[in-house]
Length: 452
Ligand SMILES: *Cc1c(COP(=O)(O)O)cnc(C)c1O
Image 1 (cartoon, rainbow, N blue to C red):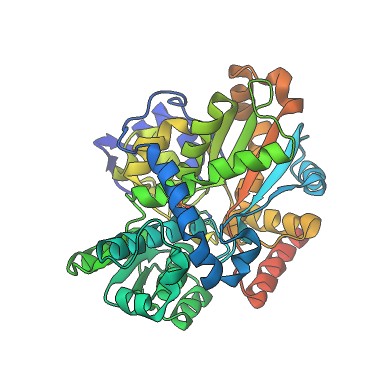
Image 2: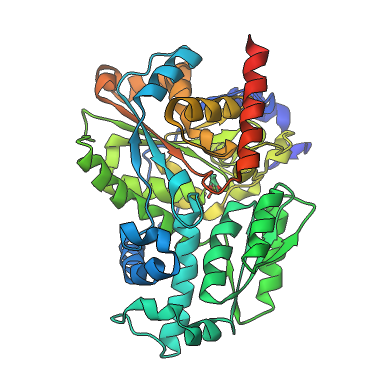
């Protein structure tokens, strides 16, 4: 813990923002963002980048289809289903003791092809964009070509003259490593202490070089960034500042709109949509929230959900310090079973670009993550990793806290909650090996046993 945070003693912070008392005590909170709906601090990100990303992903679809045959049914478009979860809704209401009016929906990014997590959106997109830029420049490709040609030996040889690097707690490295290695790039993944062994093993098996750090995510990213800077033929995918990652995540919004239409779900002034997004550095949830706000405007309310040990996005927004603040400053240790969310400092780029689009930040204990993971398995037969269960706990924190009820009231939504939809983004778990899955459920069962 630092004696002073931005020149102010901790006690002053706690007095000024009473919610921080619960945050530093590692209790769950629902914090409302006072800047929600205000103009963004930065307009450096051009929304046109999202449409460009969508078109680029369409150009790449023929390549994806041949390189990853599991995407053939969707014609090489990497997308996840939107699921109605009525059984889970009942379970959740019974477990958290709060009625959940309206509908509960799951965006099943655990089922995304290729890498089984939300990182298959941003991470894969940035690798593809990098490949396209190089191939166009070298005259190997024109935009009107059939991109399936990128799977040829000649193209793979070409890409092997370049490298891609990334710092990751696991899933970003996995997504990038799998696709970059498939294209032929030399790939280095700088992994934090939190990264799970099976993720490292799998990456090595795919041909990526894994560098391990006995430190957290911010350190792994910084080390990777520095190593890559020395090599002009290396592209570093920077999770703390990348517009491309952000654009790749944001493409989800237009796809989701089509799925909501198909499901006959209206989203408008009388039919609010609450979206609960697990948050690490902020890129994934920030990109999705940005895209959704572009398309659905005031009717959509994004909430970010973080572990009680790693509420970096909450602290960045609340203090206004963005990446200048870390969870360690407030005496938290960033130790959580939610490895995908174990991030001590938020992305400055995302805070400034999308911070005011976030209705609020919620925190959840690891214990609740495991319980949520089990409810999902029992009620919907969906397998997720602990990080990905965070969003599922959002509705309880909105409907079951004073702050949440204040939000509903202040936004004129009290009479509309029966027509509301609650969408939790299940961000990953598709690649978890069977043995680890069993261990997650065993831990969840132990926690359930403690309750009896
Ligand atoms: C990375 C990740 C997130 C959060 O994304 P950020 O861009 O780090 O905020 C959420 N869930 C899972 C499973 C992830 O891997």
